[in-house]
Amino acid sequence: MKVLLKWLVNAVSLLIVAHFVSGFVVHGFVDALIAALIVGLVNATLGSILKVLTFPLTVVTFGLFLIVINAAMLKLAAHVTPGFEVHTWKAAILGAIVLTIVSSFLHWLVRDDRRERD
Image (cartoon, rainbow, N blue to C red; front, top):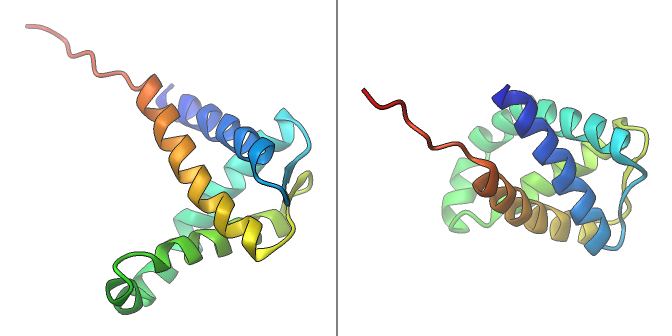
């Protein structure tokens, strides 16, 4: 259930980013669901490898290079996903920043911190 909720939150986050960032296009909710799945898969596989390989550069730039990696992962996901487009690198970088902020906020809103009481 938690995975499904996270998937839906990520799809809604993509739609919100597409509304505010020009050059970042999602054609509909179904396309947002597919894009959220592809972005997650790309980040979990290739993104993880790139983050390990570029760790020294990430340290030197105080973590700012992670934005470039996330932007590249968004462009890659958009390249293989129908209905999801990232036109320019500027849109990818701005989209990566806004997507991080929006998805973090939405995940914070829907989190379930209820603990079972003994």
